[in-house]
Length: 478
Image (cartoon, rainbow, N blue to C red; front, side, top):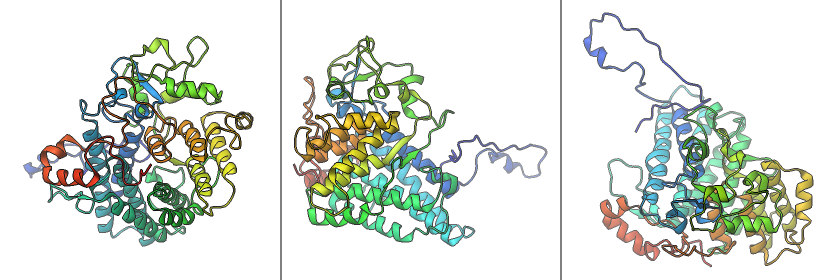
């Protein structure tokens, strides 16, 4: 599979040619504006954008996670807020975005790079590790969405009917791959250069921190399923993960279409007014007077007002996504320091030695989020002093305290908010009155898989306990 759209600095690329008399008329069959091959860096960058688009988009055909975690609700067409995944074949679209587009591009990038004899050996090694880290990321999203998925036999055009692998087995291999990538990285050289996409500098130290942060995320999700293994993974990864305020792995969208943030496309360019804040989320952040409200939402009559979740909520009557979310070049975040600090707080509560205290990591996570959105240090200090926010006095056990604040901090990162909610079980979300199912803890398998890969689909469905949105993933114990 070859892609011919080249992503890098997002500058338009053109090839100028002239046509004159030729002795070989077959040359006229060659399009001079379409390259016959594409570089590994371009394929890698394209794949990274495809994944960023999939987790950032709020298009109802693909990215409905903000609706599932009830940060937003819909104004007119309320099917997705009520957990209708089938009408728009959302699982199929999400599956294809990762398998057909991103992961296939990454596989092709690896093939092209391995055949390249001109790239410095150390740089090449770093590039291969970067490709693999992003492949691990994409695969982890699929596992955390569906459960058992094709893995060992996937991305093979000679085998159209892929067997599904056990999700826990995949997780084990993904973590082993991250360990191999960490060992392969060499800080004396660069990797993808300006095509690395996630960092303004392609220093490999950034990539090692990102890889450890991803490993930390996968490890903490195993905490209830296999605490001993999770502890080993988390304690090892924490030491090398993001450790400084303002550290993010984020995709740098452009102000020039088609490389703009898909949120701008969904909220502005489309001319549609499909989303407002959900009362579930807005009422809660109102109750704690969260300083991020002016950045998250607009006001209606001077107040922040959410529409009833899952019920038609006229756009003019309720707070809608804030102006910051309408910026063309708002970055798409893969993982950040706030998420890492919440994980460290949880690890300490579980008795694992990652350094520091739970309250310090909790405070760091919230402060980083407030500053990212535009608030001040003073805002953070005031907020953290509230009895209903302060770690020592807020309601509930550590799962509730961390879970509620992570839900707020992961605003505009719907997929990650959904994953964190399933892991910590907070907030405890009630399905809307017209919900077509219980609360979705996974996506059902694509209809195309059910119809075309039936034998393997049936086997996978049986192995996980039934292909229903209420069927919990292996790590979702409670």
